[in-house]
Image (tube, rainbow, N blue to C red; front, side):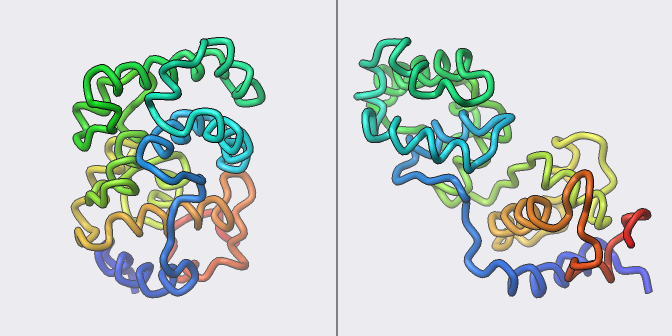
Length: 212
């Protein structure tokens, strides 16, 4: 029997909720500022690699004030092993300076303000709003986009469309943890090139035509 997207959401909450109880970001951070910086670094990179870099970066500069006083070359050297390190280092320094100048060193709690910062797009803003401030927003990365379409929760061509569609079918109280469910499922089971369909606990409701 074909299930509606809303029915699939209920099933996923039960099954993936059991697999990933109390899900949270795999990025290491202690403050909203550190989450913001880690998420900027995470673009086109793995959380594992980001955590290696931020261990030393946050030891040297744990907040916007200390980060804003660093020399560009200092930050570059600390993040050199990450993809696009030059641009990310430049953005991190500029973000820190803006936060100190305009927000007393605090991370703003609105999407508009966050997206005005260098290197911060909608996905990064949503990650910060959801994980640092508990707002019911859906951050859509490649994993969330892929898994949502494969399972049949949405039929969308862009992350923005996926976000809009998911927000219509997921209860507000579940939104933040559903981001983690879908991300973790995509990272460890429903992989891009070789999905492990034979091990998937939600294959019975999945619409992916190539599943085995």
